Length: 358
Image (tube, rainbow, N blue to C red; front, side, top):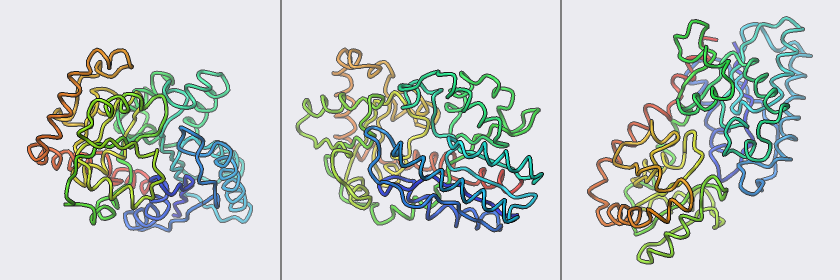
């Protein structure tokens, strides 16, 4: 059996760079199978403003991947029992992969890891393209092609099923029609060792906003809090040209990480923060509801929009001051939160099991 990882282009400041290096090794170690990465080569590092990739560059990258996949079939290298894992399910080359496998009668399995799509009204695709027939048909087709559709949270599965109701019949590993829909942790076992040198650093009165500068992340709320709480240093990370090491160093010094997000199906940054002892402050909505301990959730209606924020600003400020002034009191809960995230949401154990079983 060969496991082909059709990867996501690497951006130096994002987890995608870490996955490119670590995932093949973790997959091989866990499955004891031959692992081959299908990469699309170099890609522009400058992402489209407010997005997580470059909208032009990503299609060049995927086209290069498609060329390699086609050559593998032409050379007869793809065999019965092989597995293709797409680390981003939103990759239309999977349709061409299925086309070749079916017509050449090669019995493979295909899995895709869903991050976002038009079905999320707060995502780029949802906001800019919405429910256009072509994009919904494309996403439905990709879902149908994947033998295994992987999601990191139940919130994401529910969000997907709201648009694609056909998917509901597959929810749960014990669903009668098989495990076409799988809730698995993302393969980030490497994260703790990566951040080891940034643990136990001296904490400063720093509050971080580690999210993209996009409307669904509501950076304006963070900016307004900054103006109201001059005793703390508020840092909007994407406003600074930080390398990954510089960002992790800042993370190690911070006491608090703030979110008013309207879109979040997982949230890697707050797992990074929990590893190095950063208190997460999250609205009681989205994926946070199933992932966060109660100590770190605030009422959702406090930040549902700027108007609701203004009505509840005093309460939000009081909670921030409590976290910052009593950091040591919350430290044990942060450790407990890190353990929950590690075991339930950032371990690839379930993913590797599904892939290796084909």
